[in-house]
Structures are given as structure tokens and as C-alpha cells.
Image (cartoon, rainbow, N blue to C red; front, side, top):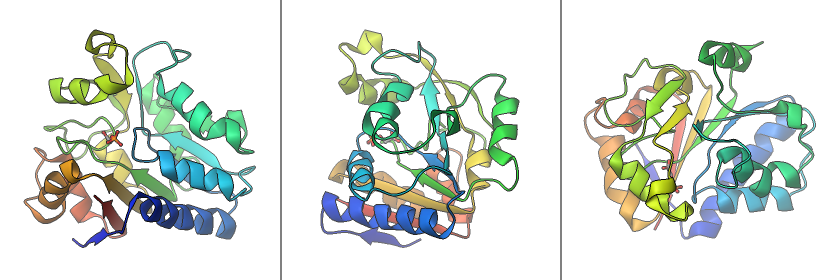
Length: 223
Ligand code: PGA
């Protein structure tokens, strides 16, 4: 699979913002899947600047920790702070995986499924919180986070002991049902896993490798 190398983080953010902008303008009632983490922060800033009309957009987040959703480090808080409170999306149209997880999946698929899914990639090849070994046909579910992910995400918490050990994540099968998928990766530390995932063996040991089986994926990288 082709990995498109971009000049810098600004170009990465602006190019993915172009794709989101086109999607929303061509189809105001779009269903989007959105990521958290450090990678999409520039994308969200760029989208805010463009003053798009989000009034009909329905957003689904990829994952959420098992924790109080009002905690400042929850993904609900992250999304409010970095995107939702800065655009005209309706709070009722912002969804996060919840239990029962099958009801969440029903909600995502009402009418005709997800139009555009934006992903990051973890240093162990995870997408959303589908850690290595996740089944390719997995659905939204509660998962245990690996030591590596807990370590990687501890930078957002006061101490590693505060990082939740579990999360609810969309499954790999769920993500693959999106009509279009964009994978964003930023930083030299992501290049190796990105190459393995996009051009190596398609294996559940490298969850992102499942994307090789999707017919509309674009992969963008900057170092
Ligand atoms: P990051 O996380 O954007 O903070 O690197 C990506 C991920 O773990 O999916």
C-alpha cells in the first residue's frame, strides 16, 4: 500500500482537513468516525479555522477509556475541548462507544453506515484500542490495554498509575465497514510500524494491517 509522505505536520493536518471539508460540503448529513491522541490535534485546529457547517454531521468516536467521562483526560473531554465545543455540531450528534455495545453499533449503522473514518496508529500497530491479537472480525467491545499502550498514553496523565487499564473500542470489523478510511501518522517513531502494517503480512498481530483489505484507504505520514 502507498504511504503518502508529507512535508510537515501542517501539511498533514491541512490535507486531511481538505478531505473532511469536501465530505461535509458534498454531503452535509455525513457520519464521521473520529480519533483522539496527539496526531489529530492539528487537524481539529484546522477544521475549526475553516468554519464549516457541522449542523447535520453525526460523529462517532473510535474509543473511550473505562473511566468517568467528565474526567479531564477522558476522550469525551478531549473531543469537547479540541473540537466539539469549537464548532456548531449538536451535542446529541456526538457519540462515544457505550454499553450495551451492540446498541452503539446499531446507532452507527442507522440508515447507511459510516461515510469517513479517520484513524491514528499506535506504536504497537493498534488502531482505536484494538491491540495486537484483536480478531479481524471484532466488534465494539470492552478491552484490556497493553502495557505498551498504557506507557504511551501515560504522557497525558499525571502518573502512569492513573492511566485506565480498560477501554471500549470500535472493533476492527466495525472500522472496516466504513466507506472511506484515512490513516494519519506523525513522527519517526511511527514509520517502522506503519511500513510493517501497510506492506507486511496481513496479520492479527499487527491490527492496522487489516487496512490492506479495504478498497478505499489513504495513508498519510510526516516525520
Ligand atoms: P497518538 O496516538 O496520536 O497520540 O500517537 C495514536 C494511537 O495510539 O492510535
